[in-house]
Image (cartoon, rainbow, N blue to C red; front, side, top):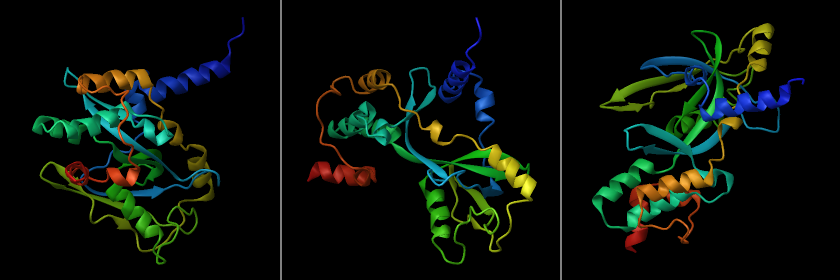
Length: 247
């Protein structure tokens, strides 16, 4: 019997996305931002149908054995998310411990994009939070920079990471003032052929698995029970959500 190569490719992609394959190989695809200055070139999308970035929201869950697991919020796909229901429910109990748990599992914006690591010349996936992403988008809306992902007239981007206690800050990050080609024709062609499937990283989590975890976080809350839905702008801060509960 001949091997179905297409099925093998699908299985390989599934294992890579879920991390059940070689986790070290999977993590090697990501750019590790070091403290100090990191120079990267953000690469454009290979076609006009997709953005150069992929957007998701991540719930970070600490399991009983102390391991931290990341779950993509199902609401990104327009689906019910039991973890969001648990998050809102935790704020309603009046318990300080539950409030602390709510802050831990809060869905946080995450953005993926393909970049060239200028130090190594390799195409990597950059995974960043909303503050650094806003810096990048703000630069692109500035007429002094424009489309910094342009392969011929774009700008390298300096990610400047400083630590404030245990928390990283990126306030000083900015594009290089002078535009420049991303590389030679041969280099840019090779980089564009090596783009990672960033949109494929935003997986739709299995409902039953997520529901089971949500029930373990807040057993007394039935995640099947309807809780008033809130759009993304309404999940901006924990303090704002508390104010809504008090009003």
